[in-house]
Image 1 (tube, one colour):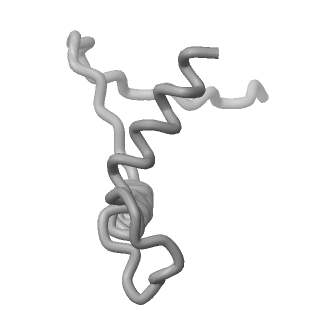
Image 2 (cartoon, rainbow, N blue to C red):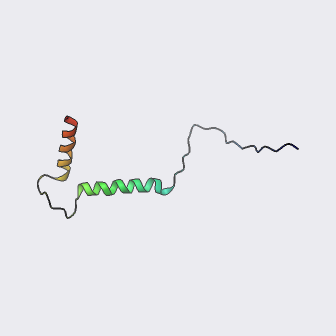
Image 3 (cartoon, helix red, strand yellow):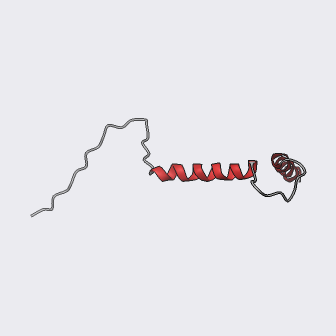
Length: 68
C-alpha cells in the first residue's frame, strides 16, 4: 500500500513579505539604545570632569578619529 503524501496549501503569492518578531526582539534593542543615549546626554552624579559638555567631547573624539 503506497504512503500518502501530505500536500501543503499555498497562499497566493504577493509582493509583501510578512515578518513576525516577538515583542522583545524590538523592545529590548530600543530600550538599550535609549538607556545608552541617556547615559551620554546626562551622566548623572559623575563630576570627574566639569570642562566641556559631554556631547562636545564626544563630537571632538569622533572628529579626531575620522581625521586619522
